[in-house]
Image 1 (tube, one colour):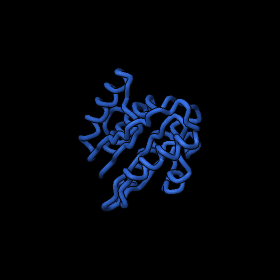
Image 2: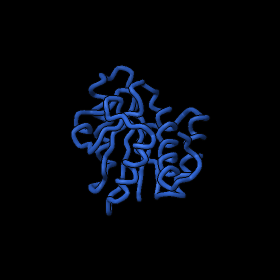
Image 3: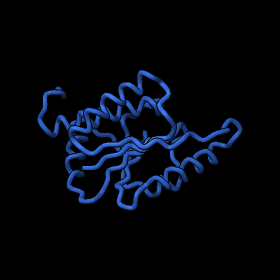
Length: 157
């Protein structure tokens, strides 16, 4: 199974970057995994939010493969418990030749164009988190899902 996270901008918080590296390394035991980083937009201080989202959206669209199953991490998406998420991942592992692409947008969310091409929208919580922290939370949940699928002693109910 191929899984990728597409994110905007580098992870600048050292402790978050270290956590992401730890779980990314663990994930590679279970699947082909990569993190793709789109550079942050420059000179956005006076740029309208709609324009920022459109420019970021254009970069996101250029990074998507034609066979990708696109999942937006969006606070308005479907919520799932950890065990349900693991079952969903297991079901998606049957997709032949497709990469499961999870997209973490910037601070303003996604452009209309990116929202339109999404195959699924997933919410980590009804709460709002900084997009850099979402990276760590989500990669840990991916790892946790694979340990549940394999019956390994990491997750406790």
